[in-house]
Image: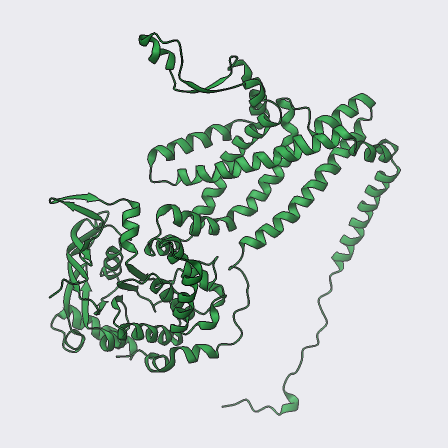
Length: 326
Length: 258
């Protein structure tokens, strides 16, 4: 039963009038007007003082602040955050209950503290360790008291006023705080990996550590990277909180100082915005390439175009058993 | 007479209060192909997973090549093996899963080479040569650099078989290897398994492919509700079943396929 239509009467190529979108043109008009108003303000308003903005952006102390307090601290804090965060996530998912609770407690503690408060505390920690931060056997003076020895069991003593302040203190404080958030992100990533992957690795004789490092984490990265990009952007901006410690060698601190000195308050804010926009944009491009890297083996790859090889494979058996009926 | 390569005695396993294996006995000799058949929920997949300790058993014993799985027996007292020791026992046993479980972030070649390099510490170049031979054997010599998601289900399952073989196992376990495949791709996987059986590989196969069981198996074990209902050569169990349960199952399978 074929529909017997003569060849010339069968419907051919579709050549239809597309749907009209008049509201798009209205939107174009509105956006264009608003944009023009904004540009008009940028160009004509004397308070912007553009030459001063660009001059301020490249002042040596500002550049130094950008490199040290902003970029270096972002980098160090994120390294601490990612490494510690992944470790915490693995601990959180460990069968060992002690590690699970330790991880939970850390995450709980640092998630509840505002970063500005945390950094201010970091700067004040010197009060707690006036004789330096000693690392060794706890309660050593009590343990050693019966023996009447004059020495102690402290192995390293750090000067709290150098460790917890400045760029180091900022990186540690922001890094610890970040680790709590990264732990949650990494945990979501790890649990998103199909359990079959772990089973396949274990069936091949890989132990827990290798399975995690070689099979689970690389796949978890796909889920971990996009929110980590967000965290990186937040971290870049949160370095402006280093004022809590306080750290002088930091972009916003330096620009504010210039503003206070010259009374050009608004142009220095514009300079800060421009710097954050520039760095942030660069980071976004980097994130794009990182995501591409961890998406290998996923997504829309075209399936192999030719299939004839499937036939040659199974050779004799393929045709014979295909039906599989008894 | 040497001892069987797989020897399971009175194996029991529960998930919570649900007892899924109620005293399974099984023995497989070297070079034998044993097919586990039965309705879903009969415990056949669970039992297969117990053999390489993806599930822990609550009672009974399983020996693979005279090695007690999961425990050390010291003067009658059992000591649980640790993670590394269990991993070492699994090295001798290859497993093929229903859903292939290839590593999606690695190419076909990397999938196959991963365990021999990481677990056995063999040299990369040498392992890659072996892997290419294995790929040729399963008919995928030209797919070494493809990622799993570029392959059809049948191709992925053949890679999974090659990956398991790369560890040179004494025993291969197949967990419904063709159940997730489109019907037209089943044949190519069964054909690879048939070749493997002909080469003398010891295999335990959970399957619904009756024809495969009939032609390839030395032994067929029919399970239902956590028990072994009937076992023996395929012509006996499939051709002339003695138990009602087996007859019912075979009738239903046959109705399905008619």
